[in-house]
Length: 172
Image (tube, rainbow, N blue to C red; front, side):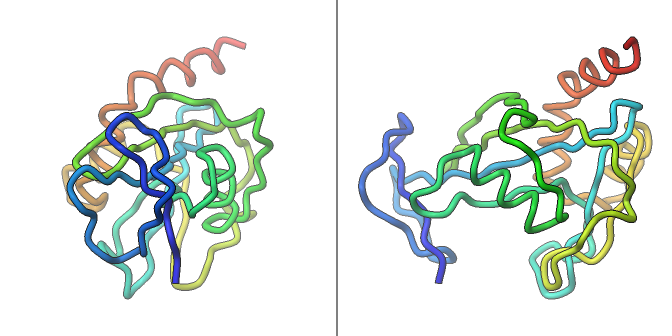
């Protein structure tokens, strides 16, 4: 069983926890973290959701729910390592923004990582494939429905910030 901290609408901890997989009550919010791994050369690292998971077979960035007692940065570092085997230092994770929906705060990060997809260690039951994808290819994947809708929406919202980081890296 996994528990998540419950926040109020102002992102204050309530001191209560939520059992993952059960409905959120009105006025309760969880914390979800997401990271866009880029190579500084115009590519984003995507993983494919394993069979048996919701949205199985679709491509996504790394991320997931923060566990009870876990802040945003340690949560994204843990999720990235669990899903890819990438060990990022806290200082390497760049905060992009936080948004709130009906029951979650989403903290978005990016990470420049220049490793090979061959170095990725996939977590059985979570991810079953990995690849570097260009920005135009991500748009093709979104149009084809290969990226689940919420991740596609998040990518489109974060794309301007990610493109700025790509441009800055390319000019170095």
